[in-house]
Image (tube, rainbow, N blue to C red):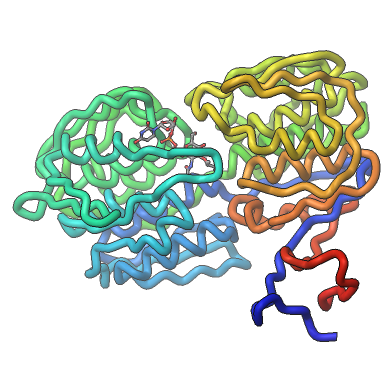
Length: 451
Ligand code: EPZ
């Protein structure tokens, strides 16, 4: 039977069907970091030649950003099977990033710093909002002006100009500390005429590894990983071969999965990881739950405890508890033997997953930027909706421990940031499968779309 269509277009999407109650066992492998891969790709634009990036995860956001780079004139080849990307930036000659692509992925805003650093001018669409509210870029714009750029807004686009074709450099203090703004200012300042300083800079591993690539390209940077970064502008940068870091948020997600769905006493090994990228706040909270935590050089053995203890957390900039793990932590707390709370100080309204968890029986109340969770309630499988990347993965975690079947819809959110999540979980004992569904199907019409 041919697939159904809605007004002539098949509105088929993927969903994940998870049958709860199967134990996570064996091992899970961590892919390359999404939030490091994207700035590495932007950095490659700064050199007139071909850079080779390895351990680049096969994700929607990576493919979207590869297209943004191509628009500027770069030739980008991505071997998804080998997770290897080549970026030939010798042809960069169109310093623009269009709304149609920037609206899909906020990190495309890195083109502002990359094109200013390479070409001395740029026209980049403002990114707009996201699933959980405004995501301002005022720090990016004020920072570029501090480096000597002329910035003006033109019908939803930022038009940036370096007088004389090259930024002078300058000092900028951020408030609050911003990962994206730190990355953007590094992209713009490494080829400026003079010295630059970023104060209250982000210290996330994503920024440090990205800065190490710039250093390998010939940039002069001191203070990576601290809150004050000093840059001495250089005239040209060289293309490099560079190995991406593993994804610390995927690592944290898998640790939480093992703590709630592993067999007590039977460790789950999470491989190809960088335990040192987790930050003390997350590791401390994780070990306080009673879960077993045995780190090796590039792996972590996690053992589910007989009883998960409730541990309240508050997110913060690195090395604080990552905001990208607060939704996943909420699911752990729903399983814990007591009440606790999650407070997000980075984003104040990142709780779209809570109404979906309510449908599964979670007992959680959001008050401003906090959610209070009563532990120990058994979750029931239900059909739930992903609203963004990390909210979506928290629903998968909940489905793994719920009684019965859970259908997680709009899996395209998950595919933005988790490489082969369903395949990895299925290989580790979880009953999970990906099927197509028609987002607009009318249940009264019993006409299934082709499987
Ligand atoms: C990065 O976003 C990550 N994205 C986010 O991960 C992550 O949640 C966030 O850092 C915080 O760790 C990528 O790396 C691609 P910020 P970014 O600028 O750079 C405020 C995921 O799930 N702010 O550090 O956009 C902002 O409102 C994504 O992988 C300003 O006020 O985050 C927020 O409160 C989601 N003005 C705080 O700073 C600005 O100009 C931190 O935002 C910029 C930011």
